[in-house]
Length: 247
Image (tube, rainbow, N blue to C red; front, side, top):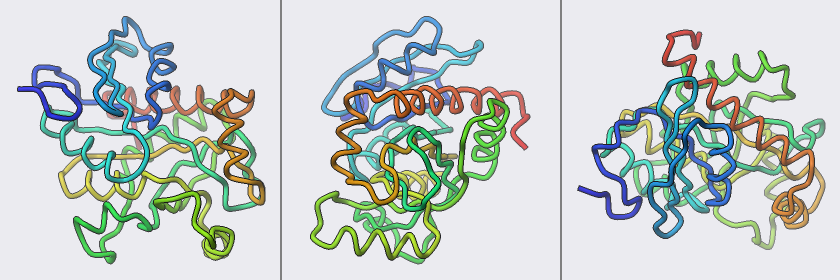
């Protein structure tokens, strides 16, 4: 039986899923897979299946925001996926995080609405330790510029006091901001799945979010390389998990 939103069935036979937000990014994941094939494209959920070093991998877009991610996690669990890695973009909240640098999220501030519909705010949004360690090892093996720590997930770029809110979380040590990680971590944990999040920085601290995101969409060199790097790190992390070499 096909899941109503992602339009994938239980016969897919895949444990590992890479989750970009943008459907266009699924095609760029395909460039690093062997024998990729299109599966479905319904609403914001575009999916392909391929292999990486012999391991079956699903890549599926989730669209923007926590609600779409929550639906994706629920339906992926129903078809047998057990490990999820988000490959997304973010804006830096600290100086020294350059364009194309990766943030490997250890936990996320739950400033989104979707995760709150599941559990109270006291429930943590944290990465699976084993999967996070696999990502860290893969990034460091490739000698990439990466930062490990906290992110903040929110619901809108265009609030009136965005600068004030961002500054407050920056002072609390949060590294970057996105719109999906906290919902991913929360729902995955509640459903017994393992999740991690790798964020490609597309806006340096102090720069305009809208201008930075626009530049990323246009394929700026450093952020485009960051995207290729986060895909590679996620795929190598799955290999480590499969081999039992994550920690």
